[in-house]
Image (cartoon, rainbow, N blue to C red; front, side, top):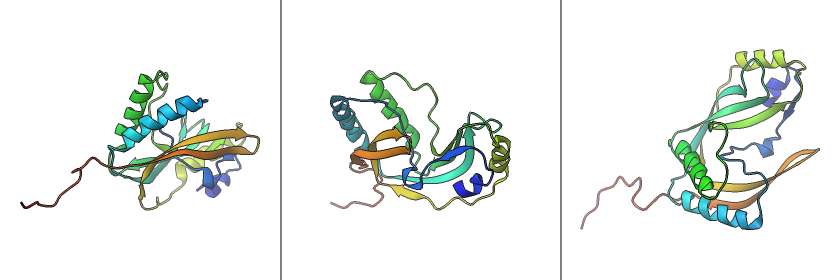
Length: 179
């Protein structure tokens, strides 16, 4: 998808395929003590949720289609748990003293960031006209707390904690029991 959009010759910094991800909440700089506290909160949240089943959906851009600054692909959650998880993360972070998110959560994967207006109109046209078939849904078994470091070579990501989704006992059980 990035290669097809790059044909517009717009001035876009495309995210490396290995760095594509879905962000629930960006935290900024945190201390080791804050990391431990956040990890504990995320572990508790992950314990109450079954693995997610996500699929890519439509292409889009922020702030709008006529003046794209960020090019993204939407993410849909077949389990319908992602909005609840994002809200719970936001609520728990607020309880830890983090300020509320300024924008509404929109499940997406950033494909690239527009650096200048050069060929932006061509990019807008491509976003509007590009036909594609999203890949099949995939299972997401865990929540990951990531460290991102921005450099002149781009962003690099390091997992700080991987927290498996584990539904509460009895959740999703459809079989009969006998005594």
